Amino acid sequence: MEIESNVKNSIAIIALSSKILGSPEDTKLFENRVTTLMDQGINKVILDLSQVKRINSTGLAILITGFNLLANSGGQFVLAQLNDFIKGALTITKLDNVLTYYDTIEEAENK
Image (cartoon, rainbow, N blue to C red; front, side):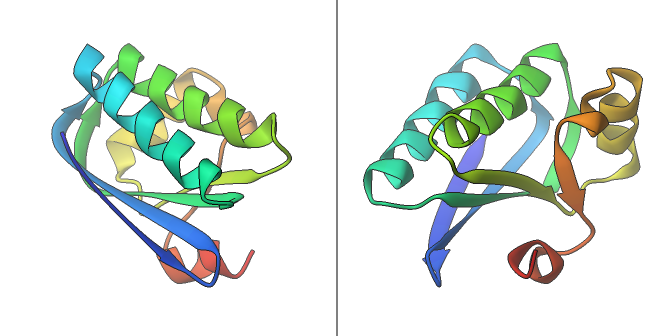
């Protein structure tokens, strides 16, 4: 998994790139990035999944980790630009009731 992040108007946008999100290495890398951003005072993270093709159960756990890290500190964690496969995985697991997602980064920034 490749991970890039940038901060704009106190909002961090983390862009992931991977054929399948969900290796053990992905988990630690993602958690470290979110924690670093939080240590810098960021309290809203948008996770851009436009370059992620598939997700497995570990990948779903990564999303929950991001949500929990931000929610437990009063922050906000949202997803953006999901493909139909990832939307389906969220629906099947009922995580679409917990995780908020938007069609575009711009929409996520404005919510």
